[in-house]
Length: 75
Image 1 (cartoon, rainbow, N blue to C red):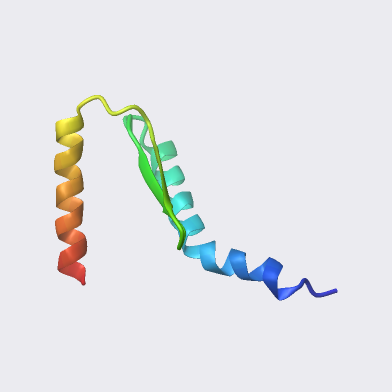
Image 2: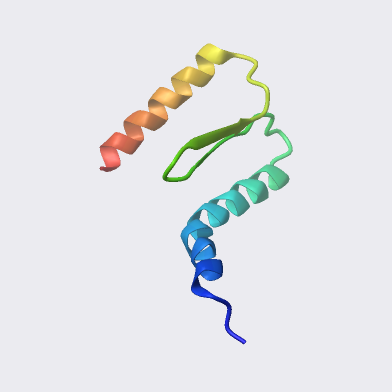
């Protein structure tokens, strides 16, 4: 029996996000020195941040700036 399209479509849309989440999970499991993780889950309506406690906010903001630069460079 086929499932209705509306039950299948969300899985297709969030597939890439689930793949990245699995990659991050595997990386953290294989690298016991990882002590921080930040994830931003975004939908068309809003974004929800998830993170471990951030001990040094200024260093974290610096990393975000570097990520922003790399993202804009790719586009």
